[in-house]
Length: 154
Image (cartoon, rainbow, N blue to C red):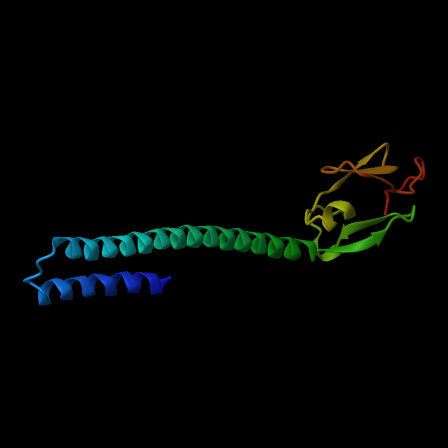
């Protein structure tokens, strides 16, 4: 990239040297040809510089996107470390918040399907706690708990 720009600059210097050393240049066409070559090289260098600027812009955007994705992944990993895999009475697997991170006094569950996609989505109990339904993907999980057993699903 710099080679073309440097070549254009050198061509400009050469044209100026020719003009200075040959003040008595009788042929205007030779001078016009030299100036034309310099202009062509300058245009070529300008086109290449524009190409490089566009490429730099695209690469900068890609880097910004990758940095944002990395930040999101780090945030997910930090949040996800608060959960552990838990087997319900039915044998179904869910992620349950670790006891030291419980804020509402009861354990809550996160969807395994959503977690594999990098999202933390909570299950909501339905049908008197016999099923859990994911807020995001609507996955249904049988808790194994039977109504009338007078206990909450664990």
